[in-house]
Length: 64
Image (cartoon, rainbow, N blue to C red):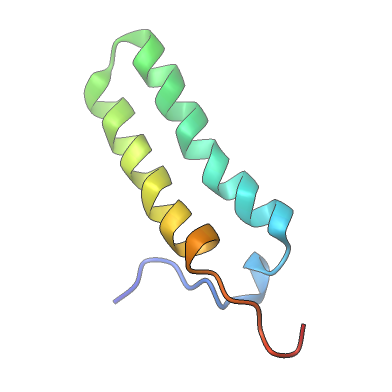
């Protein structure tokens, strides 16, 4: 079971995919700055998962 479906129409605009990917990394930086390393690693891992599915493995539909 995948946690995110990159084929959903919501993820079609590139700016939306990149924004969704950037938010966990920004929050990981906030947590890192506050000294909460476990939360920083957790959010960085979530960001990495999103990069893998929404940026690296994203394939446009044949309709686009």
